[in-house]
Image 1 (cartoon, rainbow, N blue to C red):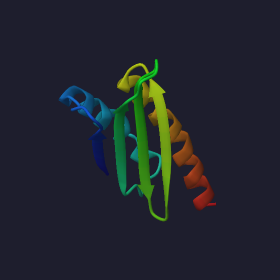
Image 2: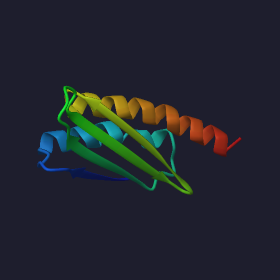
Image 3: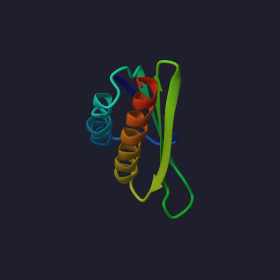
Image 4: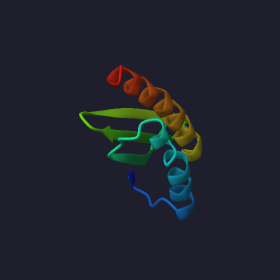
Length: 96
């Protein structure tokens, strides 16, 4: 599974990129046919100013999750948990 990361108006450091690979690299065990995973990191003006949007492309559809948090790491962990649930649900519906 390919993971593409785009950071808007800043450069993500290698430590953050490695963290994203580690956390989102595990989601393909919940849905084997994932084509690509796109991650968009951006900064917001409010209190929880880190925004993470994750698009998971699967054949015939996509799953999108977006979270705000005080750190990118926390937002990514939240997104990964939600993606796990959504992918399991999509897989169960598709293969019933």
